[in-house]
Image 1 (cartoon, rainbow, N blue to C red):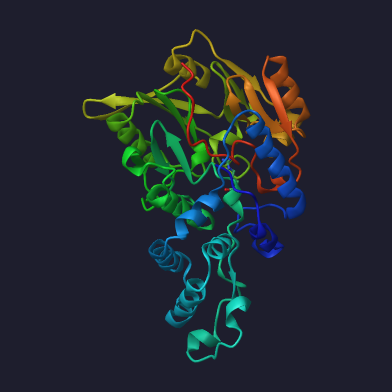
Image 2 (cartoon, rainbow, N blue to C red):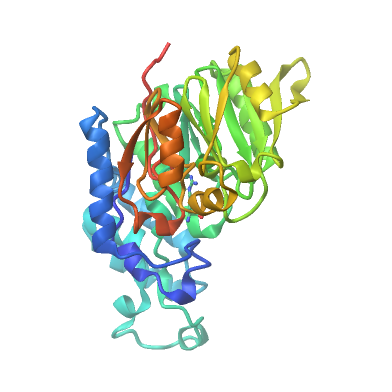
Length: 389
Ligand SMILES: NC(=[NH2+])NCCC[C@H](N)C(=O)O
């Protein structure tokens, strides 16, 4: 599942970059071209691509669902002013499903609504100096993060920052109402209304029995415990590998520094190797058993029952190149088959290293896409994985 970047990106201004988790403003026209090419690369390899916005639109064709959606949208984005909320409700109620989705993603400008509104209450006169009633959500094209399919179930993330909350609410609607997801057969591993945060960029399904989860700036140790217990109870998952990485913006999720590229090969940003800690979690008689492992490499060998694993360092051996390319998502590879990954073409040294280890590297252009700080893996959410055994 992908989301084609849209008007929400054009609502970024320097004043709101940080709050909206961006470092720069992309050029939308070019970005969409890059994104279309990304989708095509996957389709050419036999992947069926669904678009988040389309699925949501299909769900909102149903009048009752749209009504509930509008109520919830107002509840989570809402103003502290009942009359304005009522105006927003009326305004959104008159929109088609397609228009509603567009507003829910790209936001609602005060100026779109305010014309003709007569000021009555104190709250009408005094408002926060902010252009939106509903925020744009420019991070939606990182579909990896609001959820993760693990086994035959779905985890809907509790995001760490308010800037991304609404993305998970969309996923909840798709889960709840879209026939593509057979809800009765799809257990929910995590719910976006829970307290402890977990984001999909930290969830790496390593096999049908092993899931690695990053403990990071975005995902808490507590969330890992909660989801691990549920997976042990109801999924075929037997082991969870918790991988602790430094809590910092440059690598907000595990998949910005570490991804799986083949059955026994991983790529890792060398700048974090010393700081990484790995813990093996298994079900015990009274709760979870947690064991600290000697190294990440050892941990991977053990949990995957492999005689050896290869950690391929990104950046081609030079620390400056590695750090620069990590910032541009060299390590955020998307494996579309064992030993075949999609990456940005700009990360020349890292791509070359992957190739020298026998990995097939499918390059895409990403000069605009990269500005949101995410690569091919962040920009995709696998719904169904083939059985590779
Ligand atoms: N899976 C990922 N690494 N996603 C990257 C998300 C980047 C996004 N701007 C954020 O900070 O949330």
